[in-house]
Image (cartoon, rainbow, N blue to C red; front, top):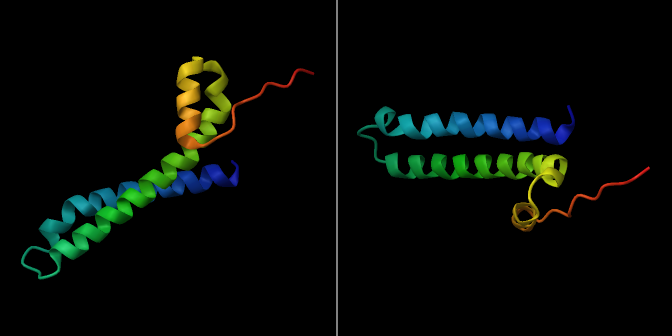
Length: 91
């Protein structure tokens, strides 16, 4: 596996862990004074990990599979991800 793919999967794993932590934190910290602060910070961490992993893994997916998608979908995805179009090289 290449390094970007490994980093993408690690970030996705961290996103899953922080998601379950975000769901269970209000029950764990019931009665604490800082429940809102901690829950909000875990929520922000979850979003950072999730969108970072989607950006890294999505970029690789579009670069490899983008040429098989319809042109209008490919153009929108490339514009969102800010990736150069896939160019086939004929040998």
